[in-house]
Image (cartoon, rainbow, N blue to C red; front, side, top):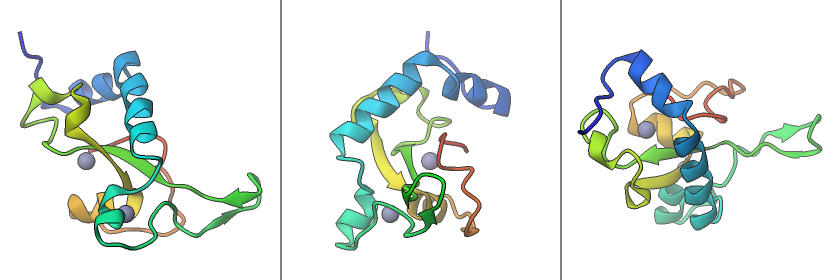
Length: 112
Ligand SMILES: [Zn+2]
Ligand SMILES: [Zn+2]
């Protein structure tokens, strides 16, 4: 049985799941914690160039994205070949979202 991820609740449940969180880390390791889209465009895209005083380093804002969207391809939800690491900026562009600097809430979790 293929699960359905249509509603925000269904998606939230998926993204809060242990399996996803583990696979997400595997995908980031595989991609060397670099934005694959920026890499394709031969630009430096592993972070936002924002400096975090608290962390004492530059902020890194990466998400792990479903290449084929979760909603359309639930059977690929936990398929690592369907995942790629993107920076927040590229991820927002992909989904047609406007990037708002200094709002870093996308960094921790993939959202829809
Ligand atoms: Zn990028
Ligand atoms: Zn996405």
